[in-house]
Image (tube, rainbow over all chains, first blue to last red; front, side, top):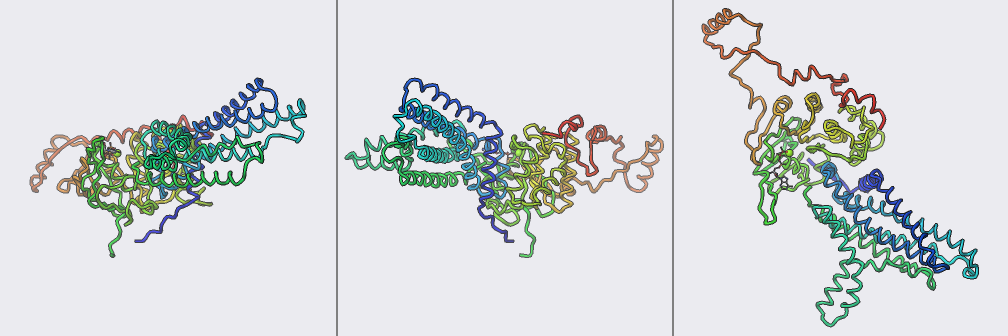
Length: 280
Length: 304
Ligand SMILES: Nc1ncnc2c1ncn2[C@@H]1O[C@H](COP(=O)(O)OP(=O)(O)OP(=O)(O)O)[C@@H](O)[C@H]1O
Ligand SMILES: [Mg+2]
């Protein structure tokens, strides 16, 4: 008896993504996110008294991005591990994977669901930060019009682009956490390892700068290989380039985005491969 | 070639788990051979830890066989296509607690490719069929054990599979609920479905199953049709009005004259579960299944 094959289906994938997102919504995760974003941006407002003037705007933006990177990373690791293991630990994965469903659809569905959740967080934080900047810039333009002879100083479009790039970076991080989760047995192990890898990804450029060109060929090779295996998260920190010279180069932005998408694809593929034979 | 394909065919199945870091293996299923023909209700019995759930998970492709060949309607069990015609209710099921019962069944229906106008009607149909219409809009997180089993059955049936695998569908369900579960299984059989079921309640298995297999420590101990295994063809029971001692003696004499003997005289008793079923209220519908909720809950749960 021949049985019609079951093709890979994007609609099943998006069903799982939607359900993952819904879990985050119904578990009241978003209330927490909103609170966090408001708290962060409000505290930037609180600190601003210390330096008055147009450098204050730079401070708000630095503070906002710092908070986005820090809390976004923590949130990405925790949420990805949680949304994956809630499925394994509650054994809902049994029922789901007993359906005519590819494990790749499951893994990428989870990824997209998590990516959407982080997207909401990024949008909230960046949105609030831009609103605050706009408002404060307006005030400063009245107080010291001489600083704003050429109109507004902040490149809001560039801010948005950097925000999107950060979101993509969190996507790479989420894919890494999923890869760890695909073979790990516990949520805790996944979270701890996830943070460890996060640190490596942020600091690997230091190792490359320090040892990448040493005479020892073997060591140099190892360092360069590590730099290749672990994505370099430092590439995504483009916030400093905003408002300098010609601003953010679209080519660089596109390259960084492509870098992120490539890593997401490869790491996601590895996660599927490792999850494929997992015993549920 | 002309032989019909078995719904499930298991040949030489062995499953080892490594249970320690040193790689010590635990043999959960040992050289198992089984064949479940289409249209049968098949009972898989055995004590705790005898490998029933492990066998079922291999049939569903959730675990890989260490050795052996497992096919569902002729398709190797680890292929995605094999699961197209299978509905599965895991043991002690647990579902997304943040969804309502209806949303849950709808989600699984869509995963199975049910769509369009059929989606709505089919979801309502199975929810009604398992008797959960009254609670369909409540969060699954608020369901009782019996209701979880029912919603689990609904999600297993929603894509109208040919084979339904139920792992302890009556565990933690009260006698009324499990009697209804048996009725539902018999109805599935009437619809021509194949059902594979595990349970510890042997009396129930006996009532619904055509064939049973008994596993012990992963090995097949007994296999056969229920009638063959437990029917006593050399005996018959007559149920009569209470007889005075004298008449009983006369009957013995009458039987002896014809070369028969009266083996036992006992007082027949109603089974406790039958008594329970006749006394406990069944807020039933004509279809048999009740709302699945205590009668005191019914008016309150109309809204989520
Ligand atoms: N993932 C696993 N890892 C290690 N051992 C396992 C695993 N799953 C099951 N086992 C072992 O395999 C054996 C069979 O387990 P299984 O769950 O199949 O039994 P069962 O017949 O369903 O029992 P029960 O009636 O209690 O549900 C048990 O000894 C169990 O400890
Ligand atoms: Mg079991």
